[in-house]
Amino acid sequence: MATTRGGIITGWGIGVPDNVVTNEDLSARMDTNDAWIRERTGIRERRIGGTTSQWAIEAGLAALERAGRRPDEIDAVILATTTPDQIIPATSATVQDGIGVPGGAFDVNAACSGFVYALTTAHGLLAIGAERLLVIGSETLSRVTDWDDRSVAILVGDGAGAVVLEAVDGPGQLLSWNLGADGSLRHLLKCDHGGFLYMNGKEIFRKAVRVVIDSAQKAITDAGLTADDIDLMVPHQANLRIISAACQRLGIPEEKAVVVIDRYGNTSSASIPLALADALDAGRLNKGDKVLLTGFGGGMTWASAVLHWGG
Ligand code: UT7
Image (cartoon, rainbow, N blue to C red; front, side):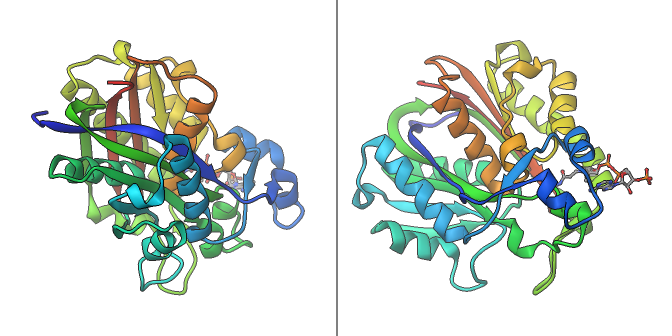
């Protein structure tokens, strides 16, 4: 990748509701059970409540604190979300105001691939002169969920993850990226104005494994690496079985994949930054590590990136 200005992640943070909803809680109100949910998805519990801007602000402030940066040092807020607080204005406007960032603000909606789309876009802004950006993935899927529909209600969770991305001379951390979409599959996962989230779980499952493997493999190859070189994989948290299948077919040992779906469920564009923050807080990333971020979602969209940690 030819660029004279790259980016490095200097801070990270999360914001999640305090309200924990367990599988038992859901079993009490719909025809499901803990064993089915855990076996089929890997989810034990999820956080529910609040607004997308609320969790984005909390995560963004935590990321700024970790980076040792003030809000007025940030050039723009890029918010990946598929559940904006309103249709207009963009939720990033509320976040920009709430955090006190003087720069620009815009939303990115690429469903569950949104954070990697946003992170890639952010690197483009750094290449043309931006100094520091706040990149956030935040969702409140619970607000578009029919809580009597077990096919969706057991899967979703709310929350946000954020990173501060700062410009450096030279290539920075991003070794490669791969973004994709196939809009002819948009009927598989959708939510109309005023409606509830609908998904054809089986079909998405099938397609997701295929597109994630293809996208991740392209990103790994474009980075000049092989699967053996990947030290940590941060996948979208949609289903533990999808993560396992992707690891298996990519040839990446499952221990290298970050899993937070058990605690947060599927938080769409928040899932990758939540998982990344979890891995960083647990000390799972060391200087020199190669990190694969990879996700897929409604659209369909997919997105992968390889980072050289500390690069
Ligand atoms: O973020 C990106 C978008 N989303 C995804 O990536 C989701 C991808 N898909 C999935 O994760 C899975 O397809 C699901 C978890 C949604 C469903 O798992 P599945 O293994 O595909 O289950 P299924 O829909 O084939 O259902 C299997 C059985 C059925 O019963 P029968 O026909 O075998 O008697 C369902 O009626 O499980 C039943 N079932 C349930 N049972 C208890 C379906 N949902 C539930 C439930 N609790 N919540």
